[in-house]
Image 1 (spheres, helix red, strand yellow):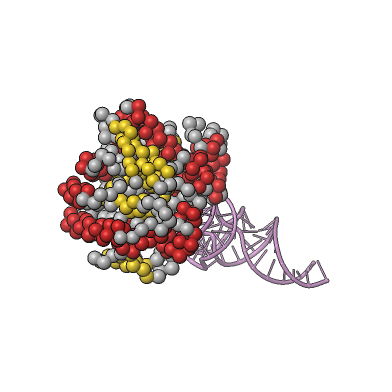
Image 2: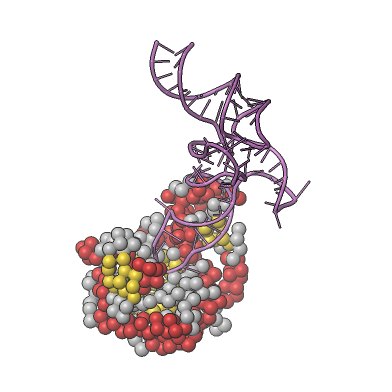
Length: 375
RNA sequence: GGGGAGAUACCGAAGCGGUCAAACGGGGCAGACUGUAAAUCUGUUGGCAAUGCCUUCGGAGGUUCGAAUCCUCCUCUCCCCA
């Protein structure tokens, strides 16, 4: 997997690049729609590609392992064949589930024992097992198995947690490097930098992942409860120490503003459930601000959802979308998700354009103010 | 024509002498959501100059210190039998 920087800014750390994968090239900065269970909820892969302009999507090791299970994914010939998405795929390792599943899991040196959220059955994930599963899923980019530390963790816990993540990373690479892809194309393993909100730990974590010759590096454990300013600080601390010639992936982030601020700090890749989940719940992100489409004020507004939007769904009216969402019609969730994803992709595409032109910074400053407006 | 059941807030429905401006659902209104246990969750929902006051439980009277709750009459609805 090769990453080529195309442009950098002089007054910002923002970068534009191209990442080559076995399933095509990814221009960065990029937003990756989240398709946890092998589907970006409510969106056809055709629309992801042609309407939204997605270049790579996510899947989740934990969810796909539990259902439908590896036997079926392998029989299909991997996730790409199973869900008919022909572009690159990245799978998260299940580390975030270890964090979000709360008390139905138990951590040890060996790995994590957890109960299925579907049927309560007991399972164990180890770094080795997670690598094997991701070989079976066949994602182009696979993530290391980590512990995602809560944003408010004490230093002593954050340090212990980071050290566990580091030991697991060795085991991840060991297994990954001793196994082969199952479907005839290259897979890359990205380490995850933890360290919570502690600059010193983040620096240590960054230095540690650099000892592995990875194709890209991820920043994890952010946007998990800490203040936004702290998230930006930690991002800056990490990107300052990462090599220029590898992509940086900020996991799980975030709002449109978070994304622009993080691009400014040198991040290349993002993913977040926000455009789809918040879309299903009636929140629209547009170039003019945020809309809560359930609010009564849109009831009789027959203007298009987003007059600047590039998706075909943007031609539906606000009043119609409100009606669908209020009526709990599934098309409402689909339209809102599709609009939001198209907007996110427009945002990173425009950021890329501005970086290439050399005027990202001023564009970003204006855009950030606009995006905060609640319409 | 005979017998029975019932009428409660936007809708459905509890309550059957005081702790009732009235449970609970739905609907309405608003908020939350960041590597998806989420088509989910939370708040609010008679009025007002509002730590209190006013109007409300089909209508009109009555009993009582006190009534959505008990009594009388009226209006309307539903069910069964002819």
